Image (cartoon, rainbow, N blue to C red; front, side, top):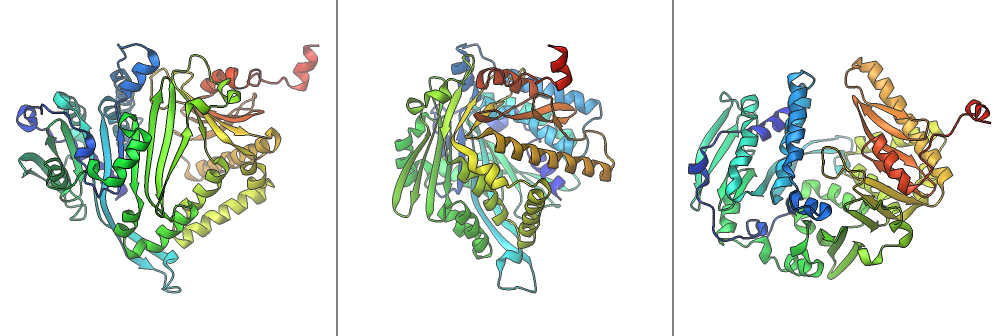
Amino acid sequence: MKKTVVSILLASLLITVPGEAFFGPPAAKTRPLTDLLPADSLVVYVAKPLAILEAVGSGDNTTQPAATGSALTAILAFLNVSGLLADEGQVYADIAAALPLFGRFEHAVALLDISSHVVAQAATAPADDNDISLRLERLRGVVILRCQDEGRAVLEQLNRLAGRYTNAEVALLEKMEAGGFRYQRLTDERLPGWAVWEWGRIADFFVVGFGNGAFERVAATYRGESSALTQHEWYRAACRRLDGDQALASCFLALARLKEELGPAAEGRYARVMAALQADRTSYDLWTIGLNDRALTWYRCYRRDREDVVRRYSDPPSYPQRHREIIPPNARHHAIIKVPTRWLVDNLPKAWVAARSEGQAQTWSRVWARLEQETGIDIDGNLISHLGEHVVLFDYPPHPLRVPFALTIAFEIDDRAPVEAAVDAILSAWSRYLDERARRSRTPLLRVKVRHARDGLWYLQAGILGPALKVTDRYIVLSWSPQALRDALEFVAPGDGVPQPRPAEARDQR
């Protein structure tokens, strides 16, 4: 079922549409994306194209962000022709190949409404919602791209996959109209009745909606027939406080309404998640990421009870010098984020477990207890308690394919020895687990392995060498590949990236 849903998601975007007749003339007036989003949206993410970030970082107005997408598409096409991608791997590869569209166009992703219902409950504890199983009863969301007169580029990218996912035997494609805007609707007999896909052009925007009536709601908001997010009183005030109009990206959460929409069935589980995050008294939350020269800003405004609170987690004028000095001079962008790291590491897993059923929560608790027992390491005492309050990130070394967010991240620590022991124990246990799973499944192809190099680096290997990690005197450092991490360590911890000679080697060098 999971694979079917993902496949239908792609199929909805891949139907060939007549270009000029479908798109029509572009609108003369430019409007913000939030003019299309209803004021009562639950979760909203808005971002400008990555070309803006790349141009500022490189100082070169000829930056071509589409090159990344072309290279990625070519690589995935080669893997497909070679037969190395199959089943769900092919689905996710196709999604990855379409992601560069989000780097090329300003876009918004929004959850408009959602509800849930109970499908099963343990007979032993009928009053305890820890033991219930929940399923979606209704969901509506939209993705909006500001294409202007480049809508054909979106269709070309999507149509390349049409032959793989369209299925006339189980799907029905209909031409629809809402408020003068033409769109198309795809229904599929394999999905619930409410799970339909709708897409079409609204002025400069290409809108893809999921859930019955999603496109119609956006069209009505654009035409002024219902309030838009730009008219939401708290949202507008929070944007002014955070200079949200200048932000590269922002995320808005209407938490109080989200709780109402999920309904009584999910109320207990929702309350436990919010309590674990200490957000149970928060009604609205707005996060923004901006750019100050080459430094990234990260601001937040939220309403707790009746008070609005502003937090500036990454504020360039207040960067500590001891962290500035590890940023490579050739990094195009960087940030020094002051966050309650210990709180996050301790509470985010608790919130994730709180969202599970009671059985799943107990399973994860046993796994964690078993890990501490097998390794003899107190994870909280040896790792979490030694995390500092600053995280440094930068985009050095540059990724050869210019993949967005290929970053090096350094987490501040105050004592290397216990942290290194805890990290080594956790990753050694993970390595043994992956080896055991591979032996049980007898699938050596594309097997994921955890490797430990002589110079102390830990890294993933799944055909290609993946993310890498190392503990230094002042930081836990991660980057997108082992060599990238070694390059970054020349600035973060000079000399720490050099392999230490074994005793025999040391004797030979005397």
